[in-house]
Length: 619
View (cartoon, one colour):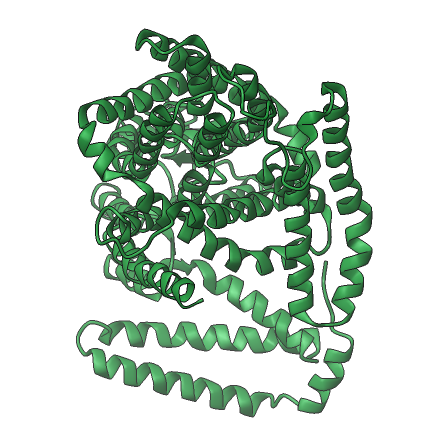
């Protein structure tokens, strides 16, 4: 027990130190875990031992992650993704397996071993890739969904791989059998019976998750004991994983299927919040154990061989992924991210290599070498992400920006709308519905293409360029509306328009009070703070929920709005000269406004209590 606690303390201590440092240097948490694992591992400081046992336990973090991924995928959405899953995923696995197998044959491996290595090398790291995509906010992008589709197919492909690998065995085990499930050995059964058992196991997960889990969770939720709810969720997750293991399949598949089945459940969000802490902890320790498992002694002895194999694996997978992306017509930036993200080995390779060794498919010396190759490729995965972010993405963005702007027709417009994003699109819709047709400019080519499909007449180009403003008819226009999210670019456009078109009136959105002062410095008269109007609308709704009459709530918010606008010029005059005096004046205005509001209307707490018994909710 003491040894276990000491090992756990070392793992957690390494995480606490390494991950914040990695985040500080913008390396990502996964790379921080891997580096920490290398340092505390048996081949460096040797603070931990029995890495295989630790990895076997912490692989459950991967299982939990796939359960949470399944919870986010409703069956209808999964069906909609069938083309990228089967198409892109199947193409990648088939081409990678073929390319690696041919390379292995060229290195004089027997064909059975070459096929086995090709199958295992086709897998990528679900844990590292999904964690990195989430951290960088790329999971819900188009390339992010394509990456997830391929990873999902790879995880599903583990099932036939487990069935095929024993057939490639060059030797037979002493007892003449092949290890099967954990509690029962279905490999002793005929093939058709094994297939029937697998189908029954998957059907059992579906039926229990679809029809049995909701009444169970309803009963557990009624107890209002959160620890029992967590225990039930973990029991369901472990049960599904154990069932898949018993029939010789991947426990991650069982967890994923359970998550998909429960994706339509009303308890989905509660399950996510309960499982997430366990997943994060085990997944972090799993990454640590991968770093610790890198055998530097073996790498030192076979440095050129292992280094060459790592490079060959990454290059082959990268090339195959580029081909796959081109076949499915991905954009250039999406294609690079897609290829870089998946050009490494996967955590299931550790399991499959051991499975292949036990079944006599691969010799021990080859397995040890290939495990080091996969571990190093996984270590390089966050580094490749970092290289993409720092070197490749800026170049791709620069090349997109060099795209010539669209030819603009329709001079004589009264209004130019610069920026058609989350704010500009609503302003544009309002103007169009009122009969005003502005010239709309946006600098995001993907957004322009998307909006054109929705029927908007949007032109691609950088509105802060003088030639584009001229082409848009700024000399004849009456008004320029700026809704950029980029403050510096918006300020540049205001300066440019003020210099060359002094009669052009400007209306601009500002992210906050500080940005408002920046625009006031340039003499912009019409400025709207982006969140201020929404805050007033929400505040009015809250006052109504607190028992105010709708007109009274409207009058109070209008009064607050009026007084805030009146104080803005006074605060603006001193916001740069005297910071301390600015803060004092700001506090004084707030106090005066509060006093005025309380005199105007004192909220009756009894009315509030009554109002909350039947809150008003607008739909």
